[in-house]
Image (cartoon, rainbow, N blue to C red):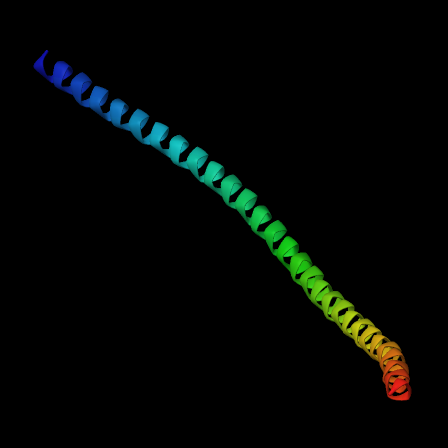
Length: 104
């Protein structure tokens, strides 16, 4: 009887270890699948962020070009306005100076 009890207790511990290794294998496989899914999801997010970053860079370059173009047009318009206002001002000042010299 002593042999039968030792045999069954030894087999019980062997069965317990088999169950433990089986469950751990299942847990590791499921954990690996979940981690791969998370990795693929993060990879998709990184790709989208990269696309958005490139779009923002292109739009930023376009915005800078448009801003410089607008600034150039504004400067030209201001210079034309200054020149025209200077010409008009000079016309009136010259007339005023001529009139003031005639009065004397």
